[in-house]
Length: 371
Image (cartoon, rainbow, N blue to C red):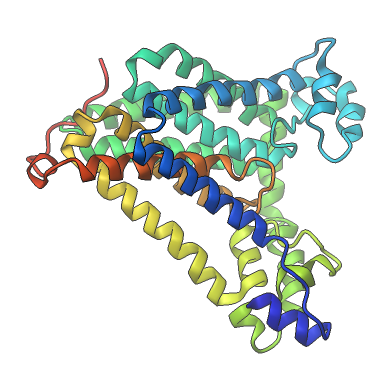
C-alpha cells in the first residue's frame, strides 16, 4: 500500500516493492519450521542439536576471518563484506582493530547474530544436559564474534541479554538474594577488570570506550541525526501514515535508508507499518512469556522450555539491537532467528494439543537448572 501510494504520487507509475520478498521468505521459514515441529515430522531434539551444529560453523567462520593464519583471506573472500577488498586491506592492522564481518558479511549484523547465538547457547546450557559441552563451545565462539565485530550495538545487546537472563532467574527463583548477591559480585568484578584494563592502556578496551564516547557526543551518529533529518524532510501528508516506500528510498541520496530500524520502518511504511510490524513482535513476546510461566514447561518439558527461552530473549534483544542496525531487513542471516521462533511455536502448540488444562496449571515450583 505504501509503495502504491508513494510511487504513483512521486513517479507517476507503480514500482514493485522487492523488499516484501524478504518478509514473505521469513513467513515461509517460520511456517515451515512450525509445521515440522507441530506435526513431529522432525524430532525437536534433532532440530535443537542441528541448530547448535549450524551456529558453531557460522561462528567459526568469523573466527577464521579474524585470527592470523594462512587461510584467513580464503574465508574473507568466501563471506565478503561487499567485494572483501576492504577487509583484506585492513589485515595489516593490529588484531584489536581488525573488524570481522563473519557469516553475516557485515560486522554489525554479525555482532547482533552472535548475540542471538549466545542467547541460544545459554538456553541450551540451562535446559539440555547432554549438549552442555557443545553449548559452552558455542558460547565461547559467539563471544569471540561479538568482541571481534567491534560493534557497539552488539555489545549493548549482549549486556541487555545478560540483564534479561538475570531478571528471568529472579522471577522464578525462591532464593533471589543469592542470585542478586552473585550478580552483584560478578558485575562489580567485570567493572573493576574493565576499568583496570582501561587505566593500564589496554588497546581493545580503550578503543571501544572511545567508540562509545564518540557515539555519545555525536548524539547517536548519522543514524540518529543526518539520516532521519534527510528522510523526514521528504515526507509530506500521507507519508506519515504510509511512509515513503522502499523504492523511493532506494532512489534517494541514502539508498540504504536509516540504520536505526524503528526509524527506518516509520520512513518506509509510516505509522501504519510501525503498528503492524511491532504488533507482531508484541504478540510473539507475550506468547513466549506466557508459556515460560507454565510450571510444567519449566520442569518437565525441557525442549519446549529451551526453545521458548531462546525465542523470548532472542526476539527481545534483537529489538534493542535494531535501534542501531537492521533486524527485519537483514538479507543474509535475518531468516535464521525465525526458524527457531517457528520451531518454538510449533512445539508448544503440539504440547498444548496433547495436554489437559490440569497438566498445565499447578502451583509454581522453584525455577530449576538441569543437573
